[in-house]
Image (cartoon, rainbow, N blue to C red; front, side):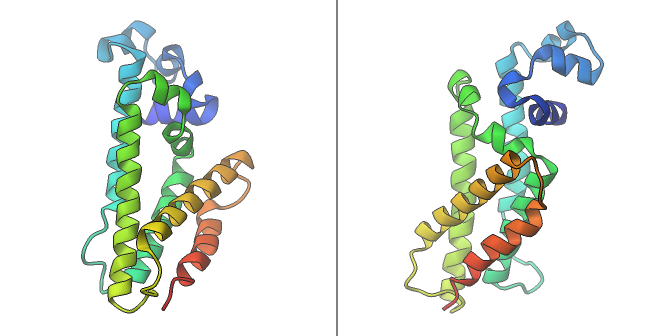
Length: 184
C-alpha cells in the first residue's frame, strides 16, 4: 500500500497503473493481479490503509500526560500536518474525484474518515468549552468544520506550491492562531 501511495504522489492517484506498481515492487504485472483481482481492489486496499493510519491519529487517547483539551486539540491538528508531510499523496487520494466515482465504496470510506476526524475535533472543542478554556458561545460543530477546511486548504496549497514550505510548521502557526482565538 505504501508503494501505491508513494506512486500516487509522483504521478497522481488516477494515473498510477498496475505496471507502475509492478515495476516499483519488482514483480510482473500478472503477479500484482494474483494478489488483487482488479485495480479497483488495489485502491480499496489503499483506502483501508489510509483509514487505518489516520484513524490512529484522530482517536485521541484519554490520557495525554495531563494535557488539557485545548492543548490536545493543538496536538491533534499538528499530527495531521506531520502525517500529510510524510505522506503527501494522502490529500490527492482522499479528494480524487476520479477514484471516488470509479470505485464503489471508496467515497463512503473517506467520507466516514473525514466525519470521524471532524467529530474528534468537535469533541475536543466541547471538552475545552466544558473546562472553561474555550468560549461557550461558539458552535463547536461549525468551528470543527472550519478547522477541517483550514487543514485541507493549507495541505492543498502546500501541494500546489510544490511542497515549498514546512507544512507542519506553517499549519501549526496558521491553525494555531485560529485555535487560540477560541479561548474564552
